[in-house]
Length: 225
Image 1 (cartoon, helix red, strand yellow):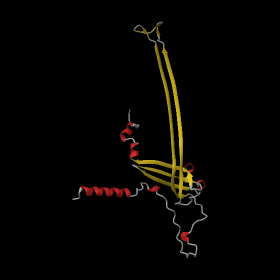
Image 2 (tube, helix red, strand yellow; image 1 turned 90 degrees about the horizontal axis):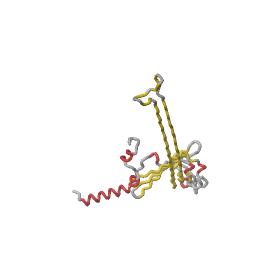
Image 3 (tube, one colour; image 1 turned 180 degrees about the horizontal axis):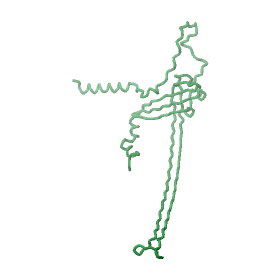
Image 4 (tube, rainbow, N blue to C red; image 1 turned 135 degrees about the vertical axis):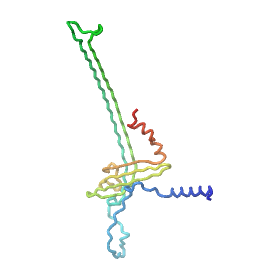
């Protein structure tokens, strides 16, 4: 029978092995796109100086332009919105009905006049305001997933950061024009068309900032009060 010390040792080794394993990718659609394989040509004899396997593109553009190339996107997102509304309504009604006369005398009920007077009033005042501000800065390197027929590049990529007891995930995808890419192979996120930028977190810190299911129920539209 294994002793308690042996069980603790095995559990420690298993935990260390789990920490050493790379974090599995949860969505393969965001996996980096490898470069397209060139067609296989007939083997040619190398010259005395030139060797094809060690060739360098001295005059090629270093900026991303092929499937599988990498590109850095500078996140410079900043949005701010505000909205205000005010509504005021008022309505008053007044109605008077005189009692009919019978044989020259006004009709009475128990000695009191049968005239009818009715008044009603309705007032409503409403005010509302809303404001929102968001800011996201940083850099993320993505890969070219597809080169479109007009020369634009479809790019996508993600970055995982494991810090202390939490994980941070940044995902970016969109379409980039080659002429918007700088000489340093960086393009600002404001130049990315159909951009989809996601920033989420997992772990202890993210759970602490998330309301529980019971709290969400009491603040949902299904709560009658």
